[in-house]
Image (tube, rainbow, N blue to C red; front, side, top):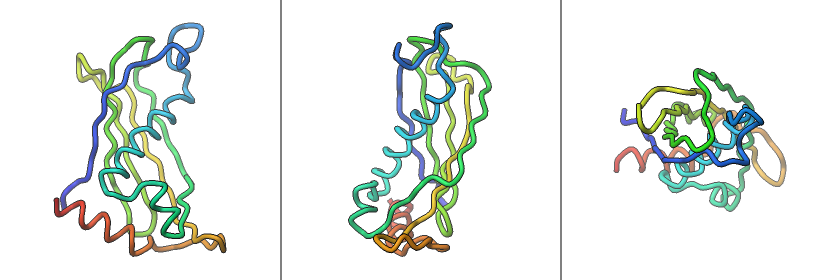
Length: 139
């Protein structure tokens, strides 16, 4: 099975840091979200597409493992990799220093499909998501 993955370069902005010029812990979730949106674009099923197809995909679980801090002005690479999609959408993340390739942070998010407007939880991923992922794996 081919992994579907995306890597993007980012730079730590001043509003993302605390008084020690270290990225505030909650901003790592924002970085995950940026990468997740790019990964969804790659499989051609963005949040707008999800809504148009009758589903919302709320986050049901998130984990962040802080290994080394990100600092103001530091350039880093965030990689998002699709891990699971049949019953829920799980994406793994790795943040590495751009210059040294040192692993700084890792984590994951999990999402489930909710049919709209009925708000009914889907215990299997919608066919449209499966089809989009299978097509992306072929490319």
